[in-house]
Image (cartoon, rainbow, N blue to C red):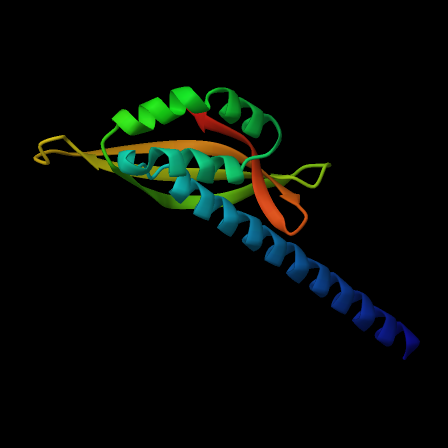
Length: 146
């Protein structure tokens, strides 16, 4: 009888642990999907807002690099055609020892030519590292995968 209770308790703990891990994976992947939709959607009429919005979600090396290049990015966004980014798929790659998570993301960016007659679609793959700061996830590294 004691063995059965012990086995049941161990199974419950293992199940609860797996549920918690799956929920944590889901939360971080959802955040990265949201961020990537924002990151790949460009509105030249609101270029300053775009740069500020991305910087607000950045931390670590990504924040430093983005801050250093913010004037260049601002100019590129202001000169670009409006574009809408869509996340095609995303999935957890791994959890790192520091508590950050690596997420792989596929995006599609759709834009039109200045005359509106042509539609351009560009598909990209990304490797994003998300790190939790307090109650908020932020992007600490972002690399386009070729």
